[in-house]
Length: 291
Ligand SMILES: C[S@@+](CC[C@H](N)C(=O)[O-])C[C@H]1O[C@@H](n2cnc3c(N)ncnc32)[C@H](O)[C@@H]1O
Image (cartoon, rainbow, N blue to C red; front, top):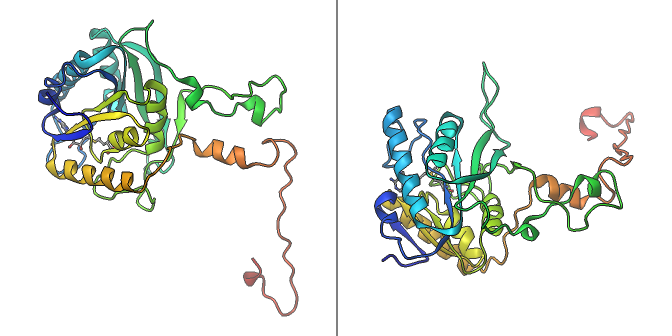
C-alpha cells in the first residue's frame, strides 16, 4: 500500500490500483488536455479515441478509490469538456457545478476571440452525502459591496460558478518556472477548503508542479499525488519541503476582485469621485515631465 503525504513517480492508473483502503475524500485532476502541449515525457497529441479511452480509464480508477461522501473535481479545456461530462455520467458521478475558471492573461488571438477559461467539473459520489464547507469560502456579496443593503448576510455569500483567478504568469512570485501548467494555489485552496477537512486525504493523479499536494499540506490535509515524469516529481517534492520550511500559515482563496473590494473605504459604486492630479504647467515645466 502507498504511504500518504508522498508524490509518487509512475502511471496514475497503475498507482490508483494501489490506493484501495485509503480514504480519499477529495480528488483534483488536471490531466493533459490533448492539445499538443509540451511536457517532458508525456505526448499530448493522441488520437481522439485513444485519448477518450484513456480518460475513461483514469476517471474510473479515481471513482473506485473515492469515499462514499467524496468529491471529484476535473479541470479540462473546451475540446474534451463534453466528453468528460458524459464519461462521468457513465460512472454514476453526480455533477454539482460546472465551474468556469476565467483567467486574466489569456492568450492573444488574431482572428477569433481569445480563449480565457478552463472548465472545472465538480462531481460527488453521492448527491445526498457530501462535504461542502461553505463558511470557509464565502465572499462579500453585491448587497454588501455595491448596494450597502442592511439585509445582506454578514457572512457574505457562496461564490458564483465563474471563478476569476489569474494564471500563474512568468513574472509571478508563485511561479516555479519548471512546469508550464502550474495552477494557482488560491484556486486549489478554494476547492480543498470546500470539499475536505483538516486531516482528510486529498489525491491528485496528475501532480505536475505539485500545486494540489502543496496546498493540501499547507491547509493541514494529507495528500497523495502521482506524475509520469520523475523530474516533475523530484521538483514538486522540493517545492513542498521548501514551502513548509517557511511555515506558510493559512492560504487564502480570495479572488483579486474581492481583495480590491475589501480594501475600498466605501462600498463600490457609491459616488466614487476620481481624484486626478492636476497638471500644473509653468514656463519652466514641460508637460511630459509633469506626471
Ligand atoms: C496539466 S499537468 C498538471 C499540472 C498541475 N495541476 C499543476 O498545478 O502543476 C498534467 C500532468 O500530468 C502528467 N501525466 C501525464 N500522463 C500521466 C499519467 N498517465 N500518470 C500520471 N501523470 C501523468 C504530466 O507529466 C503532467 O505533469
